[in-house]
Image (cartoon, rainbow, N blue to C red; front, top):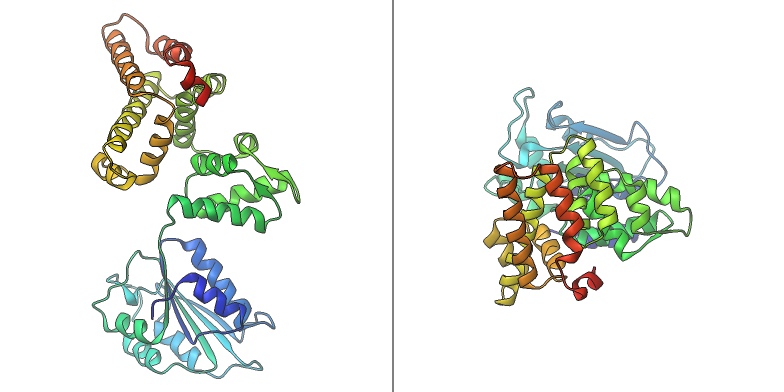
Length: 350
């Protein structure tokens, strides 16, 4: 039956291990973490070559894993068998390997009491038309690992930082997710670096993330846009020059600023009409996370201010295209004049 991650973790804390687990989804890091938790509970005496067998569906026939699961453990109460990326539960095929799905089907219907079989599937969905999938949903513990939503990702970051012995501020979490994205492996790697810098009991804040977090060029641009619309012009100017040194085109940065301001205005207008962020994101054809960020950024401005910024950006674009001003000079002029284009209230909210 389908189970939640928290339910399974609660069972494992009590020492309860199921005979068969089917873990599927796109969050490979969370799948790996749960596999490790199951391993630690099923084999508390430690891993050995006799009682922990690993197979990969693309390299070895699944019936070999079934045979190992049926074999009595050696000098141990239980054995653990892991089959990675088991495509038997999807429409994918493994042309290099001759699998016997009937063997797996028979085992799911009557698993060995002394073995724990873990089947992982790196796919968003299972093929529910298959008999194997239907049997697993009846007989095994089936745990989905869907992509974390932005609030869940922030919660995961806070928990991971705490697990590694430090703490992180709300702004630090927001900046880390903004800078690195929601890939959990990348986030864990950055958190390890940040907690090492902060030390046991130390606190990671926004400045620490800005100083240490590794960003791709795309993420650097995203952070640059955030600094611009938050009117933190000293940081924005430094980032602009860094981006230009790394061959980003000024005209592209102006285009991205205009696109972000337009999204801020659209989200602000639609929110005022009673639409929630998911509905607005669907209307705009974007993911809910950038729409949510645009909404938070747009709260700093009035509708008239955003409309005026779009007008000024369109005017700069015209001057660039007609040769009246260079694109780099236009970008610098817009950034330097931006704090004067908004009210004191907007600057204070920044």
